[in-house]
Length: 142
Length: 109
Image (tube, rainbow over all chains, first blue to last red; front, side):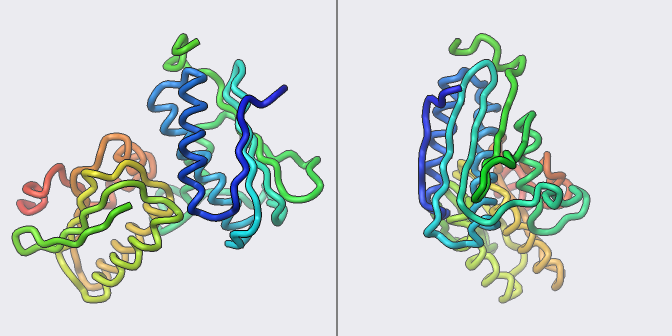
């Protein structure tokens, strides 16, 4: 599978806006509904914010690579060279337990049907996110 | 993100515009928490021109609300665009925050 777009940015929160722009543009070109496009933009933003926060622990000198594979499904791969994530420890807060934090993972998982770390990457993380075509996406721009 | 603190009929209003994300939410947090430290109440936040919010922005408001509750303060979120309201609803925060359609509504209860 060949990506049709990829972006590499520093692990600095100021570049999240750039990732959001490209993500929305790629989702739109794939034919995603406007609501889906907003959801995907937020979910990819949250995943990249997690890379900055957890993989790089706020160090802005790292790099984040985001690759887009718009095929039968809309797939996004996010790579970093930071600290390995422990998928078994990744969970959001109970939505009824109102406190700051713990929402990002919920936004990612409500948007993407597949949320999976590729354990074969030796250094850092490779997160694969896949959103299958939904009824509201059908025939848009295809 | 642009942030202005104005007064509307004697009530402090934080008027926001643009995108609230991990990059911009620390600025918002600083402004909001400085008002909380002064025990300002009521406090309205006008979302009319907000185009985007992520979990860091939402966390900022949850923190502000908790701070205000400690002194019996009232925080009202006003004129939230539909797509952003959807995020608050998904996070079950539409039941936690006092949300009003307009500043006029916020003044009236």
